[in-house]
Length: 378
Image (cartoon, rainbow, N blue to C red; front, side, top):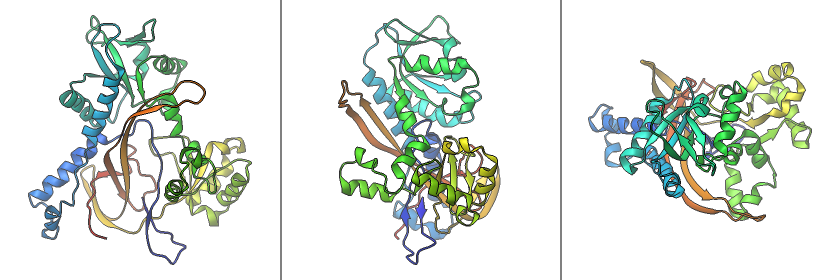
């Protein structure tokens, strides 16, 4: 998000990272469709005449997220290699049930088949043990429920479920996750990559004066540039940084500059500004370390219109830009690791716009709307 420091006389803006998502990063399919919709409407003069220069300047950039993300899954499918069981190969989308993002995911499924010839199946997470089994060499076999006599060897597991506590109501779901993790299929994400997206990991890297970022970015100049994009994040524990953060969170005067975040994904879970002190009063102190305290990003004012549920809303808005990425690697062996990155590319964008009075931003949670980037001279 664009950030302008309200406490500084310097009016220049910069970019600040909201978070880093490593599992079920959604709306890649829909962002491409909305991007194409806006470009089409611009082309047929559906917008005011003042926007005519946007066509000439190619200001509405098409998001390539659908194709790029599908190519990433296809790259994993290819890297898996040939079948070990002489079965046809497939990619498995592990999804929630019910799944509200089905139409977003379908675009990736269609692009996989149309552009790369890769067959994909959708499997509700709760039905994993019912429709898959592991061979003796950890090969994952999938039996489609609509065709029990046919079976496929799974090359890649694309997790669109398994990130929320609601996905694990019983021990069976934990057994299902272990079952999938034990397989030789490539996981998107791997378990360690899933954990790397947790708020606590982001806090450890983004706490001011944290030494840990240099472990991964040894070049001081690169590390410094990356650190500049982090909004300060603090723990709520007994460390020195944690004790200072607890003071900030409990004081109503300072809490208005912060957001309290749990280890959750999907939107609708955060505690904002003046609601933080009373929330902590009711929360047992033993639970405080499960949260991180993040300094609020303050974007400059912007006016626009949002269409949601058939209703048009005009007024102040805030935009949040997400950039997708594809990374495929081989894990190293031995004590020193030494893994090899096979593919690594930027994979399109998602722009979410919400009313400036809304603190949450999730589209699926009902707070934001999918949008397009319009590039203009500053």
